[in-house]
Image 1 (cartoon, chains in turn orange, blue):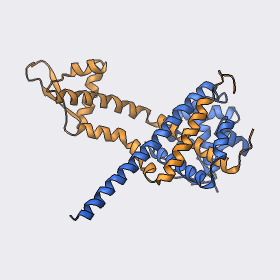
Image 2: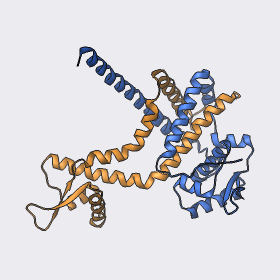
Image 3: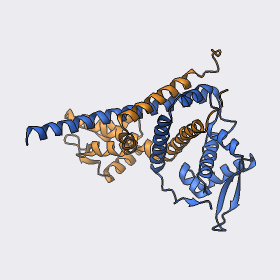
Length: 156
Length: 175
């Protein structure tokens, strides 16, 4: 086994620390991210239907998302409270309620989900072309080495 | 607007686009590395016989120790997004396993700090997990400047990730 130099140890620690931080971040955001994902899915469905001049009832939405009507109500309350959508009487069926996505809601939700991505993008945007290349090449090499480690295969 | 100004504006957008594209490629490489690394860990089951959360918590405590910073149960709970009750159980387990001990803070006798018990070498080994020879070779082949670039980038990324969805208390110096 090669004896790693101090610099190598420092680099490997930086890599491992990043992995630890990322795993912890996933734990912290587990709840809010999942909620965000289903909200986004609902809004996408609404916006698509609106683009095609189709009316969506809360029952349609629940069916599309595979949700019970009780959790659909909770989700709609949340979307309405957040200003992402509103309820409106159905134009032809007086017993049902139609759901309308508010203007700009798509962008807003995308931004919420993208906030994390943007923060990381900011870090990457500070790199020079040469630095980006060094990092990308290093990560590709590390990926290839991780892929090559398989205890079920005989060692080369 | 003169032609020259138009040209400059065009270049500005073009450069910005190219830079954005490069940045996205870097993030994409990060994501691929993460997926490959997780899959490799699952294949090799190199968890040192510890649960995922326990290992994460221990690594966080070790990092703080390396940075000469003390950390307490409250900070750890915030960092991991778990309740203080689960943190207590987790720390009990780590203490019983001989990885950490809890001490009274020298600054605030009502507060507890988490102190890793391992030697420095063990700390490094715990943080790194199983390091494969191939990975060491890749790192050794880098020039001084390349290594610096990568370390700085990983540190910046780690700091950005740490800020996501967390209100961490201000770091308390160890001494």
